[in-house]
Image (cartoon, rainbow, N blue to C red; front, side, top):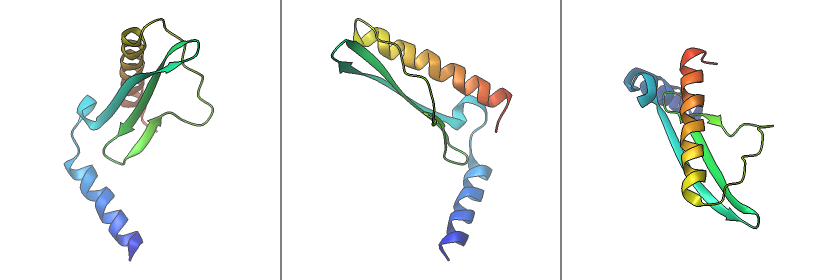
Length: 90
């Protein structure tokens, strides 16, 4: 029964999912580390709830002097990932 419910939920998400960039949730922020500020990022495709980033084996984010720069980097990187996934979805 759980399988059917999950299938219906994904199907309804696909039917009602927004198109383009609106189909993605980009959560960008930063965290303080001993050597500086590290961007944090999570990109999720809403139509199927697939996490685009982070993925297994992803590279470490660079360090920044202040949290604003780190967050701006995370947002810009997230936008690039969204554009890439729109162009070539998995």
